[in-house]
Length: 211
Image (cartoon, rainbow, N blue to C red; front, side, top):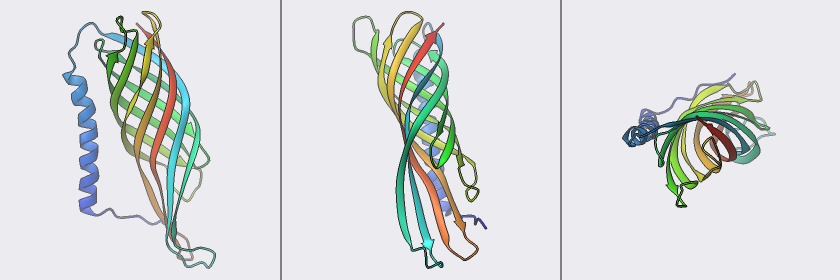
C-alpha cells in the first residue's frame, strides 16, 4: 500500500519561500516593464525534453532488493502551444501549454513566463532573450504504484529570436525547470522506497504569429 510522506515544517516553509519568490519574480518583472504599443502573439513549437529521475530504496526486506539511490535520465519530444504579448521591443510575457511523454511518465505543463530581449542588430530583428518561468506541471507516471499529481515548477529560459516580418517570428530556446514531484511507497513485504522527478531541461524551436 502507498504510504504518505510527511514533510517537516521547516522544509515546507523553505519550499513555499522558493515558490513565492519564483512567482513574484515573474509578476514583478512583467508589471515593471514600461508599456508602449503592445503586439499580441500566438504560436507553437517542438523540441526535446530531458527529465532527471531519482529512486531511493530506504528499507529492503526482500532479498532481491538492497538499499541505495538510483538516478536515470530520459529524453523525448516536447510539443507546446503558447500566447502572449510583446509589451515593447524589450519585454514580453506569455503563457505556455506543453506536453511531454517518456518511458517513465507523461507531463502536461501550464507556465507563465517573462523575457527581457536585447536587440543584436540595428532594426531589432535579431534578439537575444533571457527570462523567468513559473507554473504547474501535471505528472502522470506510467505505473499504478505512483499517483498522478499537479506540482509547482519554476526556472528560466534563454535563446535567440528572429523577426521574419511584422507578422512572423521564430526562435530557438533552452529552458530549465526545477520540478517538485516526489512520492514514497511501501510493498506488502515491507520494502520502502521513494521516487522523484528532480528537474527537466528543454530545447525547443517555435514559430509565432503577431497581430
